[in-house]
Amino acid sequence: MELSKNEKKLAHDVMEMWEDDVLKRYPEKTEKAKEEFRNYDAPARDTVREFYKINHEFQTLDFVKAKKQQYLSLTKKEMTLWDAVEFLNTLVDDSDPDTDLDQTQHLLQTSEAIRADGHPDWFVLTGFLHDLGKVLCLFGEPQWAVVGDTFPVGCKFSDKIVYPEYFSANPDSKHEIYNSKLGIYTQNCGLDNVEMSWGHDEYIYHIMKDYLPEEGLYMLRYHSFYSQHRENAYDHLMVKHDHEMFKWVDTFNKYDLYSKSPTPPNVKELRPYYEDLASKFLPDVLRF
Image (cartoon, rainbow, N blue to C red):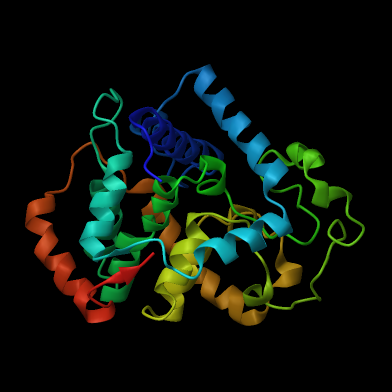
């Protein structure tokens, strides 16, 4: 399903507003100046609130299961890594006055910051891959089912999730089992046994799960799970191994949130490096 130009612009704008909202909620500990990041007027913040109102109403256990059945056969499209990145670039609207960075440049800013700090090559590649799941928007998915903070479904929604009041409209919040602390799970069952809300994190994890080290897969799958890695709201579902892996998630998140710069990376110069890097881990053609 091909989106119209207006739909692509809306998808891009919602993604950017969500990322700005995350920066406001979780400022870097070194307290970067607010003006270093994207600023939005009151209507934009209202849009973020409306985004979460819809997200929290419709992200149910049944919805997640339906989306996994719809997408995880990975039969929507076959692309090389660079074709996928360029496909994602169509979300950027050239008339947007607030930024001239496309998705390739955002991904490169994240991965180049990781590389500059001397992390392993699989970590650098993970940074480059982490937002590719947003191609869901280009398959016709609404923004609330692509971006936004992620959280477990099938158990009680934590009040540490952003805008928890909006879960009152979610039918699972009235379900006898799903609205209990453990819900369909058992104490410390491990996150691999937990159904997460549907979005680009879960999608890219499944696309890459056969190719990257476990540490990188945790980064992909849980980088938007702020109610846990910032609030520790779901310790009761995690095992010791999850906590060990979340040290990597925490390390990754500073690059995802705080690596944006008005100076764009040189895509032409960097592309050969990333093509060679991808060839070490990924097949020539990826299934989406």
